[in-house]
Length: 475
Image (cartoon, rainbow, N blue to C red; front, side, top):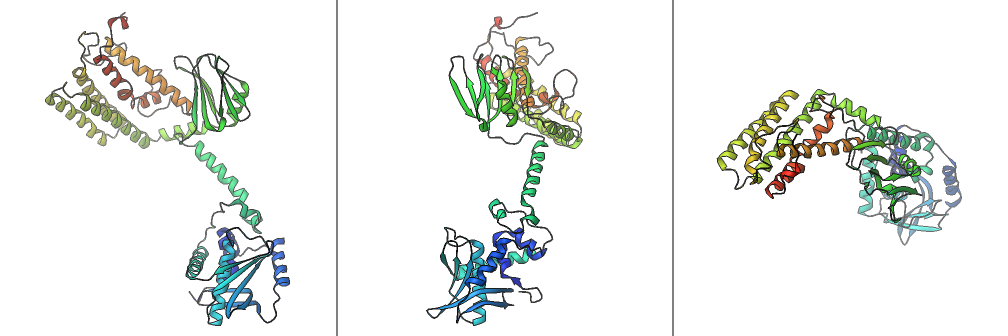
């Protein structure tokens, strides 16, 4: 222990074990407030600690331990020395409160050093419970004391207050609560957390469920804290409101005003879609504008938008490459497949060095060209209805391209609904340019799903001979 440092009060260790912020306020900032509980404790010691022929209210100091404190009293029991500490409160079920235990251990080592003899035991007397609890002064207790002293030394050297305790019940009985202001700080933290969540570019993980109502005529109402879904037969399904993140009403499903008010008050979004899945409108809790502002700020950053575009293009190209490698067995020659994959790999490598959005779009477009160049080798269309000789659109000039465009339009529709549902603006993207009425952000995100959600099922259905000429109309 540094002999130039002031001795640490044993009561400071008691405060440390109770709450580190309390210790800091009292010992570092030297703010001490004596409330009625403090005065009651002092009166207790004056009244109860009156033992003839024994030590009581003795102040001891130790340079070795760096401690000083006033021992309540010391008794001799069966030729052993026992340190006592009085407390006016109730004893916990576990034996002693951690702060009381640490305090009696500290007094025990002071007495042991002063008498130059072992003190094997300390006792804490809880007067409200009329109970005395024994504390063994063993190696574990000594280690506990050393750790506490080291922590006290560490806190004394810092200039920042420790955070408020997570145990709110401790604050209710703390004399320094009017100085510490724990409730006010918790409120500020809650507001900051709320602002942080509102400012997220992407929605955070939410374990609540999204409730889709697809049966026409179904009625969604509210009963207490539950959302009640009543079908056309009058059967009810009750779902706790805390488990629902959003209610999506498809087609002719109905929602009561009471349910909408309940949803708005509990951060539950309500969205209306047509029977075909087209997004119509939505009701979300006020404050969602913060998320959109964060979206605009993030996507206006050129470096951030460029990196998102690079990752998007890479993910799309890798999806296409893996699909070709998995589906080409026995259909494409190794020589032809090898050349196509080699070209795609060139575009993937080029993405790493692309420094503009146009360059990234160029590499993505060339990779898509080689991907579609390989697709005819995966098709087994004997009838010739779904013959594919290259990608064309606006309008598509053959059934296969028409089917491709139809599937992509379904993905686009779902992307728009999903983006609006989570509170983002689909018109502000990072990869596609706003050249048409289509939403750029929806076009961006659907790139990740083209291959897995439509190309793979479409080619599989063609090879199973599920398409016929009458499925299409030519104009």
